[in-house]
Image 1: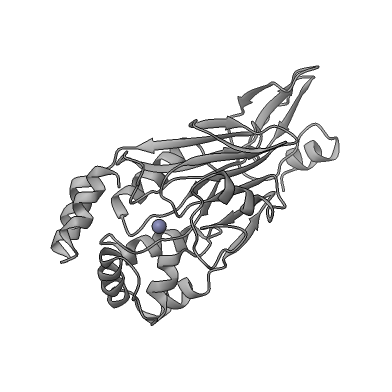
Image 2: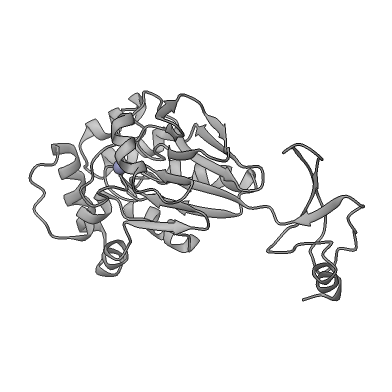
Length: 298
Ligand code: ZN
């Protein structure tokens, strides 16, 4: 640790937790914050905060799931998250299934070293269970996916946890009340069941492939917004949408960011190279409908 950094921590003027520091000024009597980035690394920087400013670490999470082996969509999301200066990544499961790059997507997420929870397709692709009962498209894609994954990658998928707490929030693929039954949260009553097992203010999930924000204060309700500020006394259950196979009528890749300092959650939609993703599905011999549905967003 540099002498500059050590001194900053000792006299309480700076707080270096990781990486690039920001200057934060807290406005008196309000929640608003002014923020300015300091140039240079902690080791070389000689800038001192002016009185009334303190230096704290930015912490911004990129939360993404339901990638479903769509490499073009995943690469676009990760590039966008980096451009938005996300400092941490979190994966909400269903890395594989449906599209043509399960190995590449799994390796990319695994190499991020980020928290990941298990999705139903991760489970099905890594086990030898009977696929009866699944829809024919999912079944065909899972049989193909099983043949692409080696034992080491299947072990990695099999070992994923159903629920994880990350910092001060929870992540799960489907629901908190029964995470391994793969039920869908489709309305406020489903959300109420999940909220009753939510012990953090925020929980992020996926599985429906449609972004949604549920809130719980005196009641449980949803809002149709692409962004929301986190307020004390309210719980949030946030579906981050699907990276690789959106089903809300919008074909663009979806993911969320959570700015811990600014207490703000945003859901982003991104165009990606869908033609390449579709061509790969056809070339792999997967059902053509899997390529068609990508463009329809369903
Ligand atoms: Zn999924």
